Image (cartoon, rainbow, N blue to C red; front, side, top):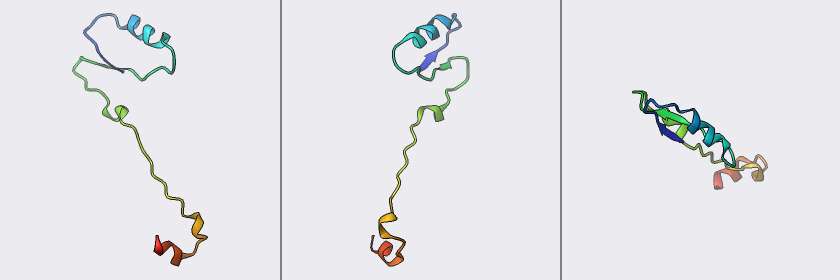
Length: 64
């Protein structure tokens, strides 16, 4: 969750976010000259290929 901080007391906003249902989101404050953490806004995706069906036979792996 990105929040622009304009100098007002941010505590009531943060308490309202924490009181909501479900998981508590990551909150980033901006507007003070600091940028947001772009890495926190990315979702990592991993692709894994199961090669155990080949039984360790290298010639079968070359066919795939």
